[in-house]
Length: 39
Image 1 (cartoon, rainbow, N blue to C red):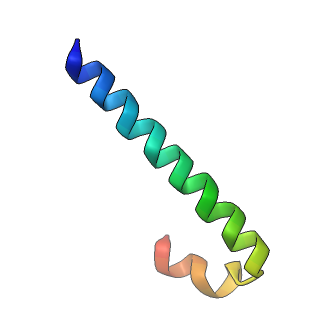
Image 2 (tube, rainbow, N blue to C red):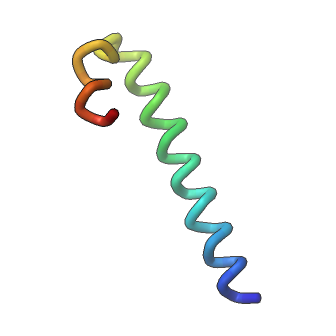
Image 3 (cartoon, rainbow, N blue to C red):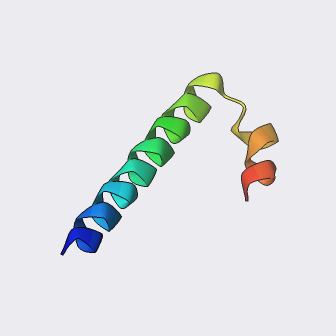
C-alpha cells in the first residue's frame, strides 16, 4: 500500500514539473530552439 502512495506522489510531482516547464517554455517563446534537446 505504501508503494502505491509513493508512486502516486512521484507521478504527481513529475506532472507538476512538466506543466510548470511547459508554461515557462511558452512564456519564454523559445520552444523551437529548446524542444529538440528534450525530445
